[in-house]
Length: 411
Image (cartoon, helix red, strand yellow):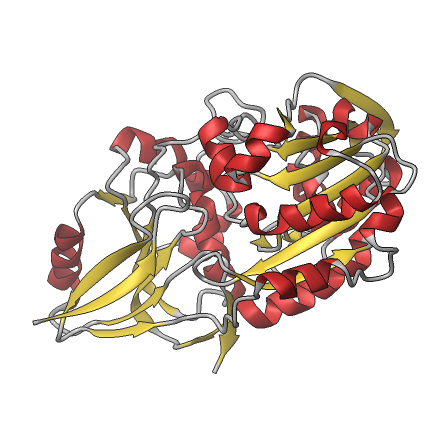
């Protein structure tokens, strides 16, 4: 007999869930985050029409010649297609028709999106009727000097030229900026590679970083958004399966602050201490291996106390796009590329622990591009469980964390 646990899997693709099987003798705890009830379409609309410290979007749009709507890319599961029709309706009230609107895909240094991606993210009707542009981190940039802490500010020119600037993105924990969403869709979303490099490396210069809180890097991001302009921000809080459980809109600072408060409650997770094995599922950031460092977010927020100092971390990712792409930190020769084994994170939180990686879709060459060779790759789940049983016996204590956006709330 076996125990079966379902976790969300392969963002934007089928199957939506993966079944994990364990021997009955294992002591396995599924650590779900608090989550929340999914919002109806009317509730989404009402949240959009109740902005925080801002006029309604239809009022902001009056007299404007054109608008740009910046949305996050396929590394985020934000269900933009459920929200953007309400945004367009507000713009139509101000006579900003679809031919005057550009949707700008906030790629940062990620890969461009294709038509299929856009249909999944935005919906077929939007793709067929509105101009959509991929951001380019090396071209089509306007310089705004430097930020207060010396970050060079190069921003997408399409964005800069728009009369009305709107952002729409998910609010998920981030190791540098505390949370995604808000002004972060401007930086790094639509900034040039010099700006991205300075932003990603700011922690090395003593600028504060951290998961799930306001950080020095977040403050720099917001100062830059203030300088280049962001008129209306829409922030989405999601559950473990990518459903919308909260939405704030309005001023990019104030609406995001409220979203962070909501997200902290939604993502909080009760934990059990001193496990022998912890399974960290990387959904919703599991389309590609280059995003997998997010698997350590939860471990860092607990200072590693959920796991013995010599026990085992198992990272799990569909990685159906394989190694993935990030022109700043993931490609050979990229400005900030390095193997995770050389990082402070590895030395502080991994140390003598075993690290396994489960994915049906990557090779050892892919894995060791990002991780040290001490990490053991498994493409087959049953072989992974057999290996762990040979180490811990028939009844190890284990916890499963079903998604990468969870925050720790100790019992």
